[in-house]
Length: 135
View 1: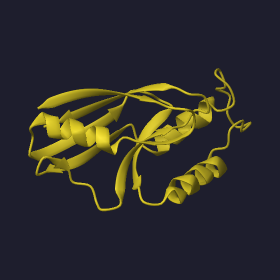
View 2: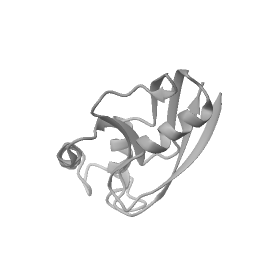
View 3: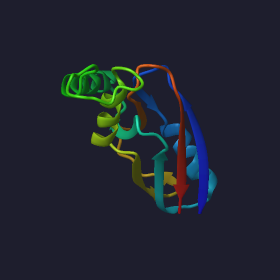
View 4: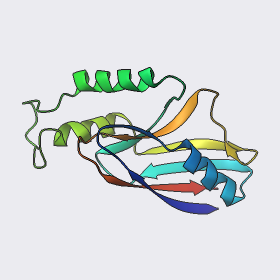
């Protein structure tokens, strides 16, 4: 079993690919078959597995979330940190804080066009903590 801590510096809302860092943690763990669990320690960021070949997919995802959960929606009373505060929490709840990926032959067994991303939901830059557990 292995436990690796990552820090992802974001520039604000959007997706940040962490596939290579997670694959490196799996390789260093020495586990050849098992499970890799990735967890983000925040309530306004999340993790997604998404197509990694065409960046338009992630841009379209951002456009969808902007329509689904717009910043400054008067529905929300929790605005302590600005108009993107509650929408960021909703977006993280609709996605996920944790992802499990099978490990095969010492690597995350992702599909051909799959990449692992930290999804920053706040508009300002943040420093996000991610834990990778391999067993």
